[in-house]
Image 1: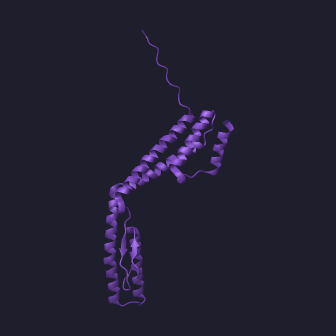
Image 2: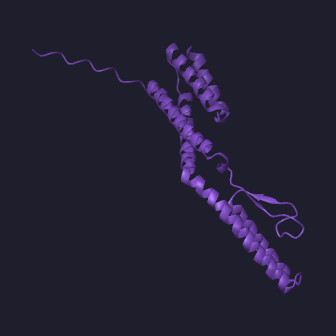
Image 3: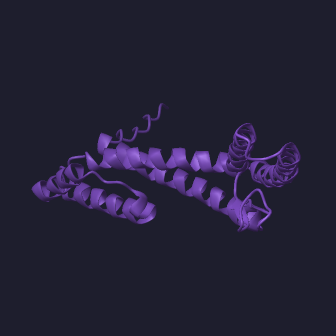
Amino acid sequence: MVTPAAASPPPASIFQDVLAACRAAEDHYEVCQARETTIAEALGNSFFPTWTAPGGASSIWSHKPTAFHTSASLEAEIARKHAGIEASFAQGGMNKPAYERWKRDLEEQGGKGLAALREQEAIIEASGYHDAYDKCDEAFFEAREAFRAVMGLRCETIEEVRAKAACLIRVYQGLGLELEVDGDAFVACMTSLCEEA
């Protein structure tokens, strides 16, 4: 006896596909955001690299202790100070012993600072935070594009009006004020809801 084949479900509409894609993008963003937050919280104070240069009247750095938060910013300051020492010596602003002392102090202190900051930066790199941040950033833009696709949907039934409105509210609340909504697109969206409701 031959049994009739089970009827296949009707294909999802484009409207439903767009809403589903938006929900999937939201969920992906939430997962990525949770991973980034978890790593940042686990790092604790290590998430904020800091090295403070020595201060004082005889310090080459500053009268007040100066804090650096990245090795790149410290490298730039070391290069600037080296150039200043060279220019001062060339113009006769300091003698040879003073020149050598300033250069030596800058190399020693700057070297300690770079080593400290690079060690802290290596901890952050090893934690996977940068990768998590990049993935979260990508997921946010994907969710924003999916949201814009929903904004462009036209509603044909009251059920679609309700589904679209629910999606817009959910995404706005989930992504918060970080979500940039174009004014014209928002007006078009509201118009599509009002015309068909």
